[in-house]
Amino acid sequence: MRELVVGFDLDMTLIDTVPGFGATLRALGDELGVEFAVEELTSRLGPPLGDSLAEHLPADQLDAAIDRFRALYPDLAITSVPLLPGAAEAIADVRRHSGRVVVVTGKFRPNAQLHVDHLGLDLDHLEGEVWGVGKADVLRREGVSVYVGDHVHDVEGALAAGVTSVSVLTGGCTREELLEAGTHVVLDDLAAFPAWLDEHLLVTRLAALEADLRDRGSVMVAYSGGADSAFLLAAAVRALGAHRVVAATGYSDSLPRSERDPARELAESLGVEVVTPRTHEMEREGYRANAGDRCFFCKAELLDVLVPLAAERGLAFVATGTNADDAVAGFRPGIRAAEERGAITPLRDAGLTKAQVREASRRWELPTWDKPAAACLSSRVAYGIEVTPFRLARVERAEAACREALAEAGVPLRDLRVRDLGERASVEVDAALLLDHLAPATAAADALLDAVRRCGFDAAELDPRGFRSGSMNEALQQQ
Image (cartoon, rainbow, N blue to C red; front, side, top):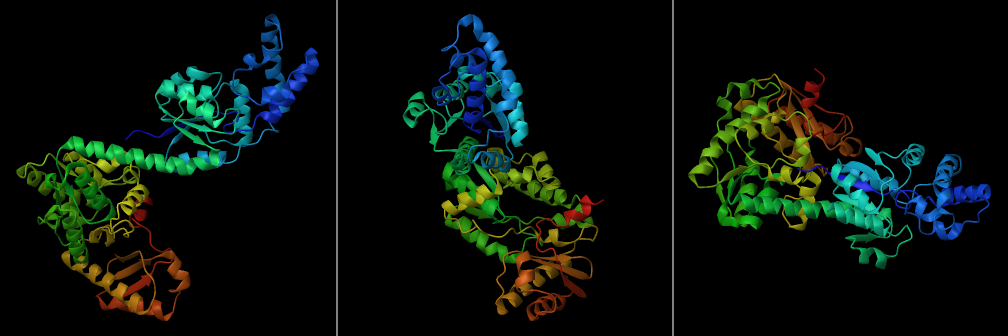
């Protein structure tokens, strides 16, 4: 997965330099006895300072005038220059996508840094005193894939670097001029950038996913029926055709029975053959021991079953639904086990996040687009407590009883986990329900906990923090 790096120009892209530039130009003119055309020069900011001053000064005075302008600038132009509308939000959106932010500007770097510091811009790199096609070397070096500017020369730099050029109309260039220069996108201002970036990343990552799957030739998808594996299965069918795709669901005590029929029905609706080999993770001591690396043994068992099964059927690869968020989520021993056994991760490789998987699934009208996360039953058992078929069955019964009890009470429920802490259970539900419907000693809360106890737990309590995916890992992080 290629890291997202977005580059921005500074003047009239991120900041409104007109007030500061004009004030400095007037001060310089007073010192030199020259009347600069301030309004005209500030209407087309962007080119190097020397180009602007050259129209009003003899060549032999130009270098000294540039130096003096730069010396005057900090006192006259920093505090008066604001961010342009949407600038902070645009940078924040790049961060939301785990991207790097690079500013590449023709401005004198020390003065550009003063603006960055004064306005608190969250940057990874600032490069100054580069202009036009000269920006291309910096953009390539920093791995930029999108460059945002306001001037036709910003477009030249982006195109020379082979990256996507996004132009905003906050500078002196018109839409027509920017399009004629070859920009790929024109936005009114940076307020429109987050929505554009969201769509751009989704479209480009879906295209990368399709190309990757097509190159694979054929795949067996490790298919649980959850949002990620269902989307991967649908994407594989689109790229390869159903006849080159098989959905493989490992049946064991850790897969809730309530998940099995819906998963099969969805796969069959896509025209895909479904195979349901039995997996035997319970026979692996490391899995039963339920230390922090339990998922390693579970995924190892699954892949040890699926890899030879795929080979028998002439399928080139086994693919898992690991997404880009999973890759940066920290403790994921199951991912390591799959990698060691040669499984591919097309969603992760394309950079698709969980949110993007859900959005694409919604557009493709997959019923799993808003399906709550449904980790295996063993993830409900506290680390250090042995995983047994009895414990898994008890958790499954308790969760089914909870859903039934809340439905009867008219309580809307999305996410639910019954955590097995030994002979007592901790119940996690959507945090909002704890205030609105399940406050302590309410009838609905009492009915919920009674339902859990009837399934074989000596005691049960509601977790006041609400549902948290992977909450069992919190104990590991505290060790």
